[in-house]
Amino acid sequence: MDDAAAAAAAKMRSSAKAGGVRFSEEAPLAGAPSHVRFDDKLHDSVVMVTAEDDGSFLVKLGFLKAQHRYEIAFTLPEVPALGKDVCLAPTPSPHLRVVDVSPAPEGGLKVTCEYMAQQEGVLCEQVQLLSEANDDVCVTVKVHARVMDRHHGTPMLLEGVRCIGVELEYDSEQSDWQGFD
Image (cartoon, rainbow, N blue to C red; front, side, top):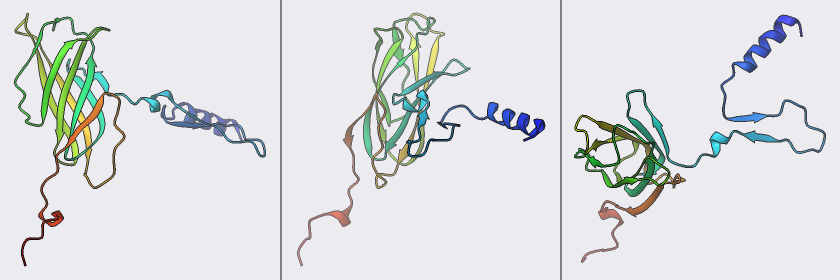
């Protein structure tokens, strides 16, 4: 390999997207098992909370299943302007209900919600937390998840998400009742 080709190959390796699975560049010995190393980010199985540039928070729930009711618990980082006394703005969504907001022992706010996943697709709901001490302070929390159709398997739920019920629609074709002939 000439110098230009080696430099191009090195540049491609250094600019490759970080994350994912990495295979050893060394050739395995005959009969030796090959090793695959997974990045730590792939092992995260908890609800992810990230701060957005606009001051809101994005909460990623992973996969949920349609027609199922979930309890969702997550911790928001501390927002000094919000203070410790927080109340909720009325939630416009009938599917997302905040059950509790309380100070978390490690700092920040622990938020517990219930969500009814109605239909498949990408869900995006939001709630607003208001400061009781300062009327001008409001924090938006956006909740994102992918909802699978109820006929397509069972998702692995992230830590912080718990299924608390199934709300199946009545289907007359699946009824055991046969009526009179």
